[in-house]
Length: 148
Image (cartoon, rainbow, N blue to C red; front, side):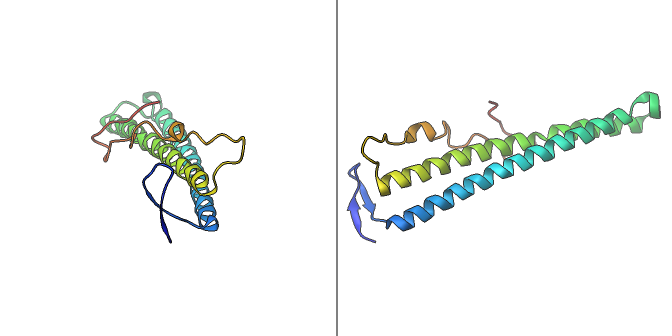
């Protein structure tokens, strides 16, 4: 591949249009897969919440009595529901990654193929996420999550 200067004046590499098109297609496929993954995570989380709610309702004092074991089981169910914050973190990461990939795919297309006459350039700045990483939590016991 041959080195050249880009429109911004920095160094660049010429990429054959077919290579750029295949790379853009691959980026779009990955975006689609991430969106499917987010849907699967969301569906699994909804089902887990339903099952935890049903188990909690079954373990009422009226049905099984009042005992230390019941309190322990109900506390474990409440803790498990809290652990389901994983789905929210995963969804935020998937959204963030999808936006980055989308920006890369559109920029690759624009830089390689240019824009047609009368066509506006894609607003890459609008596609980029505000922060490099929306989820700073690396384990369930510590960290922060951006809620949106």
